[in-house]
Length: 95
Image (cartoon, rainbow, N blue to C red; front, side, top):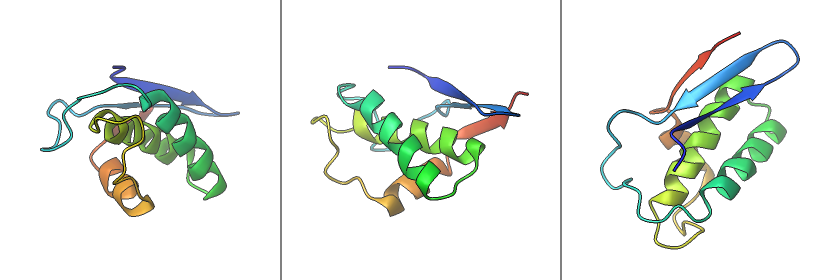
């Protein structure tokens, strides 16, 4: 599984990384669907007016939640869970 990702906009670039220690219950059990979840989170957060940095963190959080489920789509996925999980994702502006 990818350990993070970067997103670039017209005037800034951000990167987000998985935390060094994954939160309990979010260990990787299946990476199928993680990339799709990340892409969906980027689109959802763009439509929701989130900043580029927030979108980057939300994408990594979505991939983490997807990878923690035995099925490609985590049945527990919700906006509230995604937003809460993203709080634990390190993200920084790199340009």
